[in-house]
Length: 126
Image (cartoon, rainbow, N blue to C red; front, side, top):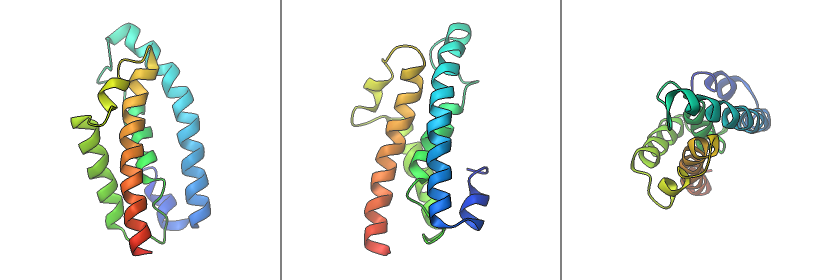
């Protein structure tokens, strides 16, 4: 979130969206590979790896533009963490995917669920 906040503060909504989307795509590709390697050394979903959490949180923040209220950033974090911890609605099942895919997929899906809630809120606020 600390890496994303300056973007939200100083960039246009379009730049914020596309830079966030680009970072998600790049880190998902690299993170899937790195997660697969990390699991070989430290076991399933090792604590030392956090790229999956970063990508999931950025997915949750994708609909948040500089036009949105600041509290949506905190809400996106809260929603993401709730979905990531409790793993409802099929999130737990994605952990069973092979290699680094399982490690990344549960956090991405938690981010997608959070994103959907933020989109609904934005539809009613903006």
